[in-house]
Image (cartoon, rainbow, N blue to C red):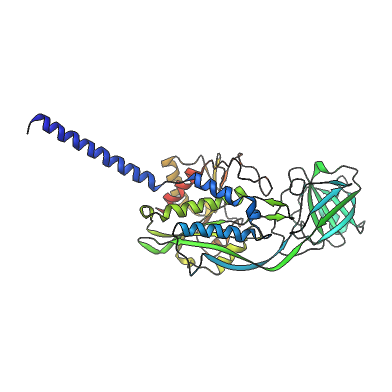
Length: 428
């Protein structure tokens, strides 16, 4: 063999080794691949007007469930039974009709200027305004000891700590308006019953000091057994198929307040749904199949009080004792300040693993820990003894919460790539 032939073979060997290294690198890289563009498409879809805020007017939740089930089917996820749906029902009030509010005959814009507690009945009344903003009454003295209650009045109060009373019946009080310094936010967790006292929140700037009358028109429809569904799909593990990692996110949002105003819910929680769908896409690929089974659950009923996740925990389609970890994703559209892990301080070993992954791969700016809190869909699992965490992102780039401005426009997903890789590395 001459020198030129030897050099040619050495060169060929180097080329082959280089190609092998490149192939390995590409494979390793693809094993962590996420698709933030796909996630943004999901957020844009679910936050669009055709889903009516994914609530219980015009069956917006059912439209969203159908979309999610279609994505599960596209990725070839397995079903628990004959359907991706786990059906159940719960009572909920709705405002499907025209909504209107005016102060001294000046119309206010629903969602932008005011919101109405979902515990309110139908009403079409003009109230006399009793302004107590500067009266110095505490809420306790106002609603328990106040002796000057009058029929047909609406009491204006400051936005103090109203959680104890908001949305509940106060004997002798027809209506209360809380004047908010910020945009009024809505929630539907008090919509499981109809109360006698009407509560509204109004942007304080829209209420003059000398207001005399307030007209309110609300048309409600109470549904004793609203039929809804969780959406469940799973991928069988290659080595430990009986053991599961479970990823959850609620797909419901606030829905519609009246027949025109809807709450898009892009960050809360189309963002979490987008991530579990992208995780389903990732793990469904043959080259990414994990040793453990992975389940994906999109819950309804979260905004009404964790109803969907509670139903699943009481009627599990997966043996709860076989779940290694539940990771609940709720409001993960930001991330410039990192993430917070609720229940994180309860699991030293898991947090150590997460921090090691994050430090090694430089994925997220910071990881903050919180203790036990029943503030999202991880809670019913945790109460059943399942290791469960709830992750949300932090950052000023997404400030809207339960308002009509939580839209998909210019959606940031600041820490999407890092959080996605962190989660997948936990499973592997």
